[in-house]
Amino acid sequence: MVLVGRITKDAVVNQLKNERQVINFTLAINDYYKPKTGEAKNITTFINCSYWLNPRLAERITKGTLVEATGRIYANAYIGNDGEPKASLNCHVNSIKLHGNPKLNNGAFTAANTTTTEGALSANDITEPLEDLPF
Image (tube, rainbow, N blue to C red):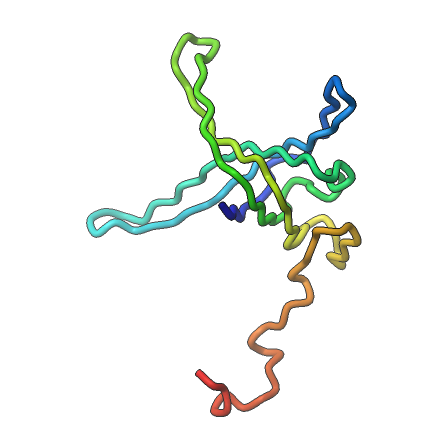
């Protein structure tokens, strides 16, 4: 499953007993819809993510970064401290693409498995006449 959202806080690298490292972070995915009757609704879904492949990537996964994460989603049911049943959405991430970081001015990322949209063309950058476009 492909998830696109913003990082809620800086990623944390956790060390396991067998010296493996995992990056843990949370994605916030915003959704907007307008029902036939009523006013527009904004919904934010939070997904806890874990990434095992490259712990050095954690320094680039900072609060506010737009991230595209691909992986397997699963639900985790548990009993909270108040005794009430709760659940969370989790994702075991296989690949990450970084699409922009508000903290960096130039948006240049050098780590493998990362991309940026900072250099993407906008509609104003097109120099061909609109009549010649194929669609």
